Length: 340
Image (tube, rainbow, N blue to C red; front, side):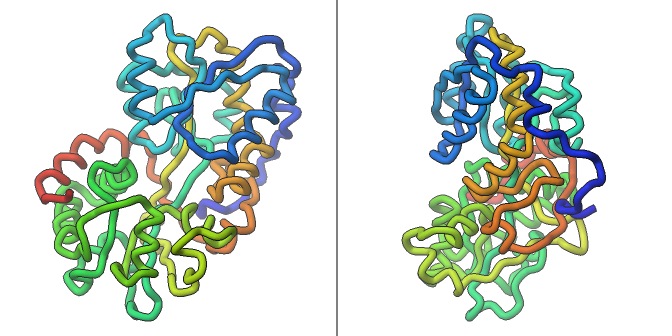
């Protein structure tokens, strides 16, 4: 089923989702590695709707996870928000999240975007797709496996093996195609690199504009952002770049997610659950898309204009809990093939 096919299921309004928490007294301690200024609206709207004050501690994901683990039962954390399946999986393995039984989240968030034990839920998504120079590439790769084809030798740019997006993409290839095929893919990618892996996703796109790369892999929200507003070194020449949603005749495009869960020792558990319910509401879901050019996790929510410009596509609906189990093997493959 297409990621964007609307369901006939009635969508709960934000006011209904928040009914039990409306004007509740108290606070919420949020540990977040999302670094987007646009998220301010999410926090202020939640407080306005519920009366719950949000106290934020922001930092890099690994630092927050280490802090939560060190704090143990004395941790003030109520909710962890972070980016990518790998980090959410790590949080679960470290024991800093707890399972919750919540009908709203079960109904709103697709099953493949939830942890198998309900310790974390996705609230927004980004498709990791193939971008190419329209002038220089007449036959772009149509799926991830084809990126390793020798005909693209010296043409491909990608992020480093230490990046969580790279790790999760390889983990998904393992899940969909097996370890042997995934190893062949990683080997071929290293052979096809136009340069050593460097920089972030925006740098992969700038590499096409500058002529360093003919083909790059990046998350859609970096490109959509450059369509919506000026991004230095990218927006002025963005018409030069074409894009492919990979594997449309097979598993579909790989999706990265941003998500969260209730902290293992949450002192304000009811408020934490109310906040997660809010993040799954139409209001918050639309803001993830409009404010940060992401795809909503809730299938029935309309995409923002910048995201809609990318077109319809089939998303890989592989269960991300299964993908997360392959992360250690993915790192082994990266090390074995010399992916820097």
